[in-house]
Image (tube, rainbow, N blue to C red; front, side, top):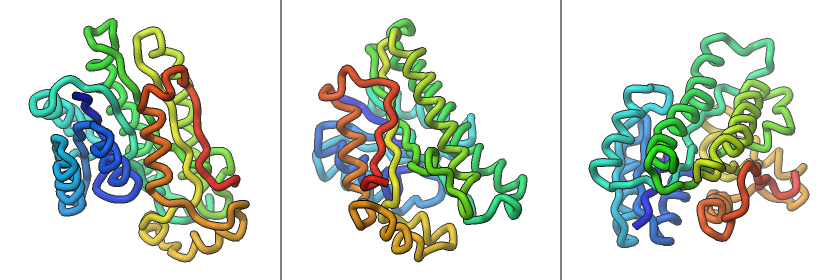
Length: 247
């Protein structure tokens, strides 16, 4: 059996990834911060696919909760094979001169500290030099990291730029230790994230500048993540795969 952790998987890309992973034979542990009902629904979907599931509240930015989450995965699902660092937020849509220190603290705590903490815990379990059998990590970045998010989300783009750097650096550090590390960088995707940030019409606006003429779906991103988790990508590490319809 293969065991996968997906952080922040109560909705959106994380939920789609967890459900597709179950269809493809993974047992799945999902973490969430607030949406318990959504997380339990996803866990039920994993079980309906015939796989084992675990859903636990664990704030990605909280070290103690992250450690406890991985310990519970050990106890209930067993040896870890993969991690998807999906937990993340955009922060409010603001120009740079309206961004506050509190916004930055929360944003980077979840998007960067959270990614590092989960990665650290996965390494402890998967690295061959620590007694593991190897494994795969996929980080969820954003096309904003390259495009910059000017006028709306430079703060978010900067956090995802850090995710890209962490992906490349971790891939080089961990390849000799049996762990591949890659990232996906979604562009405009049909999720609730824009509405939560107060710009519910942004997807329609962005569709006009996407060469393919539409927003992507969470299932399209999930399929890319599962490819990077699979043996079909066995010689790929340190890659940041754009999923932006050409944008």
